[in-house]
Length: 69
Ligand SMILES: [Zn+2]
Image (cartoon, rainbow, N blue to C red; front, side, top):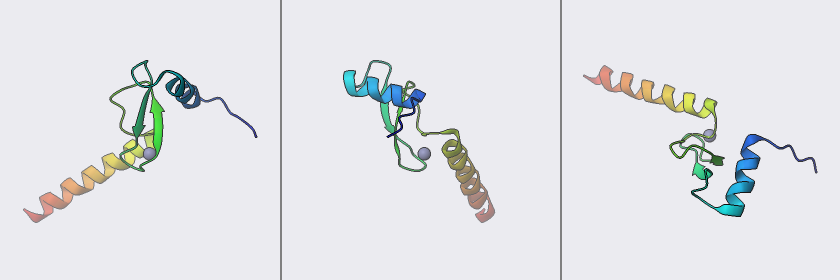
């Protein structure tokens, strides 16, 4: 098995060892539901693509709301 050490896998290793509150947070992505590890407690998306997808969905929802007015 090939193990690629990414920034996230390092965060996950730290999270598994120390748990929440040591600069490592486990979150579930609001866009795709994937579990991910982050150093930012406010993070809500696992990657930029998910954040953009959610952003575009918000824009579409707003346009749809405006169209009904
Ligand atoms: Zn995601």
